[in-house]
Length: 119
Image (cartoon, rainbow, N blue to C red; front, side):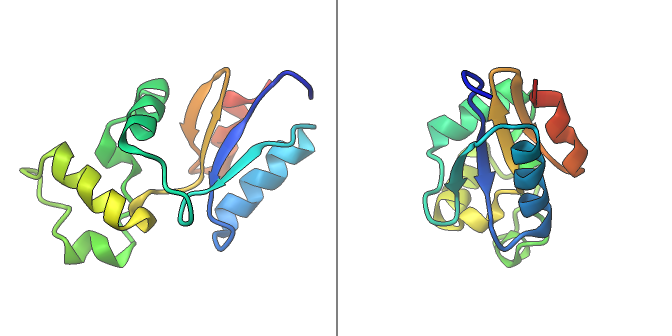
């Protein structure tokens, strides 16, 4: 679908992320794929995505990732600044997949949330 730009923050090792990528392609869109473990988004990019998705930073933290517990990221007193530092050091802490389009941004868990940002 020309003119409809979609970006997926993708981890090819994740079944949900692969499924969402396939769903985007089945909709006739070839998305920009950002393998965020290799090319993590900057703090500014993440802040923009969170604003578009209506999410808070803690909403996109991957609680199953080992650094989450090791770094004590479940501490409610921890500042967003500290969480952004942790994410910069360990991008695996970003829950996936995140899809951004002209219609907004969604953390696609469950995977069907991708339809909220596709035409």
